[in-house]
Structures are given as C-alpha cells and as structure tokens.
Image (cartoon, rainbow, N blue to C red; front, side, top):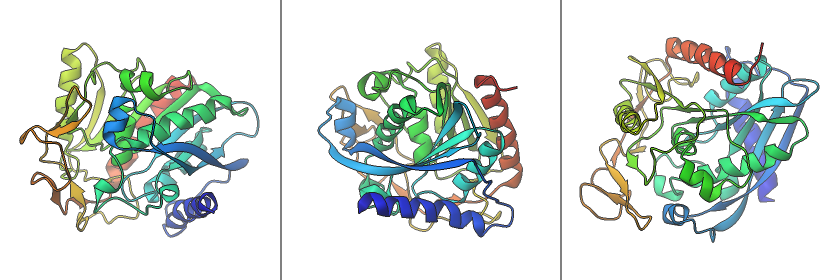
Length: 326
C-alpha cells in the first residue's frame, strides 16, 4: 500500500503544479514507467560509517522515456525539502523536449514524509544520496537506458545530495552499480559541511547553480568549498545569479521574494565530520543538532525568470556535450 500511495502522490505532486501554471506544459512522451526503488533510511552517522543496517524502505520513481526507440540518455532529478514541485515539472518537460529521458525520485512519500522544510531532522541529511545510488542500480539494468549517458540534477536538499554524491569515498562505500554519472548539476545546495575526503571527487564535471542573495543555502559556502577543491587540484564550475533567490527555478513562486515560513536553514552553521563519522557543530565542538543556536528559520524563496532561462540554456549545453548529442 505504501508503494501504491507513493506512486499516486508522485503523480499528483508532479503533474498538478504544472497544470496550474500557464507556462508549464507536460510534454507527451512515448512511455512512462512508475518504478519502486528499494533503499534505506538511516542516520548520517550510519551513512558516514558505512553501516548498512538502516531501515529498508521502498520509495517511488518516475521514468519518462523521451524517445520512441533505442537506449536513452537519462537525467536523474532529486527534489528539495518540500518534495516534488513545479521546478521538477518544468525541468522534466525541458529535458524531454531535448530528447533526454528523466528519472524523478520521490524520496519522501515512501518514508511517510510530506516534507522536511520546518523540521530537517525528520530525515538524515545524506539519505537522498543512498536513493541516488540505488537509482543507478536500477538504470544500469534497464533495457531502454544508456548507462554511459546518465546525469544527476538536484535542488536544495536534493542539490546537496547531488553535490556530495560526486564524492569518491561515498561512491566506494555505497554505489554498487558499477557506473557513474556523466555530470553532476546541483542547484542551490547546502555546502555548509566539510566531510572527510570531500575534495576527492568523481572525474565527471560538477556544475553548481545558485543565487548571490540566497539566504536559505548561501552560495558563499559553495564558493568556499570550490576554493578548497581548487587547492586540492579539483575544480568545479559555479554559475552565480546576482538577483536570484533560493528555488529561483520554481515557476509557481512569485517573482517578489517571500518568506518560507518556519523553514529551517543552516546558513550560519559550520559543520564538520569527525574521524569517527559523526557530524559536529564546528563552533561548539558538539554533535550537530537542528536544535543548535546556529539553526535559523524563515529564509526567502522566489522565482527568477531570467536566471531560470539562463540555467535552462546552460544545462542544455552541458548535457548535449556530455551525452554527445548532435
């Protein structure tokens, strides 16, 4: 029943926002498959320590096959703390229109969650990375998927997952598929945490998109991470939009920024992984908790049509290059 509920909710969440927005049109595709995804729910400590004794759970994913025949290039999309929203619908339509299939992961419904905005402690920060790697296992065996042409996009909490899913240590611990993504495209991720060996990444390109005025997941933290990577000999690309708020690619949000009421943000936290695999608050030296004083609420969100248009063009260029599309 939980899988059936997950499938129903992913359809509602994925389709309804798009139908309510004049500018968003769900493009017909030759085939859509709703796929149960076996994964784990675990604490961040379990993830970091490689402890696979998490709770087994089945979540839902939607595969839209954009072309009528042959093996497909596929982009895996991972939602943020609010679940699947209008930005996911927009990107699915955009990518399908380019002849690129999409695999949308619903990381919440099968876990009994509607969202984590106001209580991020409901789900460990790193669970969505497990879901991402499990999606690789499914896609690697799918007869309509080209396993050498897969890319990953994530947004906010999903952007954090998309960014750190590129860490080679995490691949070695959790990715059993034998394949990697051809590109990692995190949107406005949280970059407040320093993980052990997080400057050793996949060889595939990583490109972060974010807004200068984002006060939910400040881009400054990602720029600091990029500097650490550069010193370690590994560069990532960052596209910065000077006027873009958090969730700037969500067409159902107003263009005038609004408060994400009671949403938690770690914008003023500095987190670090200890050798024991525990996340600590670097300021206090204690194990991190969402009850820490550095955790704040009521950041802003807003749609930015100009930034979205540029991001769509940039993503198209990147994917056509890594997928070797004419």
